[in-house]
Image 1: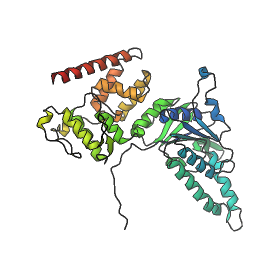
Image 2: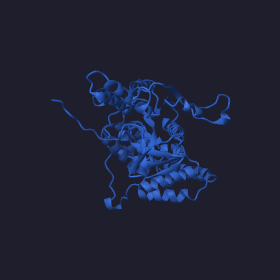
Image 3: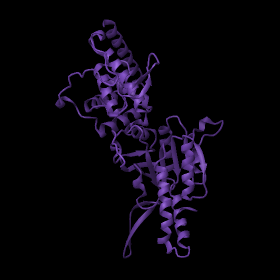
Image 4: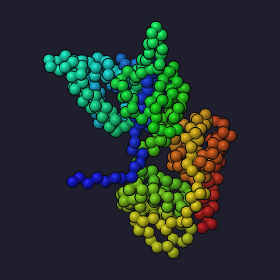
Length: 409
């Protein structure tokens, strides 16, 4: 009998599945490229183009950097058999492309050679039984296409055309909304749906709480930043914990928290090279070593920690004294304020956050409600011209305080 084992759930390797839907000219392609550029984090974006090269409008012009543009890899298709899309997705995965855009997914439904054409042709075969029988051939193809997209190892953005939906009562025609040109309910396979109208995006379906009911003009890097925060940045959990461990000002309590986090994620025994000596070690052993070094008592008076055991726990604060996590409204306000200050890079945002709240902050979701409130209060007092100097001053003060503490010890 097969043995099933449950493991702790984490977000670090989750990838975005985004749908942008709207009529022609609503800004779907440009929005997809702007979001993808940030999601790719310096890597290439691949575009499967069914729109007769329309995405090329946004590519750079050789020798004319003043015209701007977004770098991406381009794959045009003129036959929209879903099996062609499956092959394109495989090629993107083989090339380790971090973000794949399908512009537009609608063509693989009702375009030349698309799913509806396959079903119609199959239904005309002798004994097939018409369109009902045609779906016996079409359904497995569609399912293979969906699985290919959803299992792609990087982020996926699909654009979908929309058409008006109407009801008729007698002589009265009423517009009741828009429908994506795709199989009914296909959008529910995606984690985020944004309706585009004249360059403005409205989130109509999301699994990311900070984006609920959000409306944003020209969605782009700022939106991608929130998505990455909600996905845990798609980073290696071992490297993330190690980076936090090596931050200036590590405390014994912080080492305890990192050890507990590594244990929950089953990565204590993960092999790594020692940050100083380069010798083979494990994450648990290095956390224990650095935790011992950060403990107020002399290290010589303490027993050596076992490689997979944390230092003795410090007294925990009563549960009633611990503030809750930052709210979705606070996270949205923080993101918008950082954008107004011109701080759009994730690393720069986390540096500013850590300096202002007075401790290393690996992700905005790590903030509690009081820290988030203090951060917002501080940010709104800055301007784009003054915040850089303020942060430099805070960093200088932090380094001097640490050096003073180490000298006194």
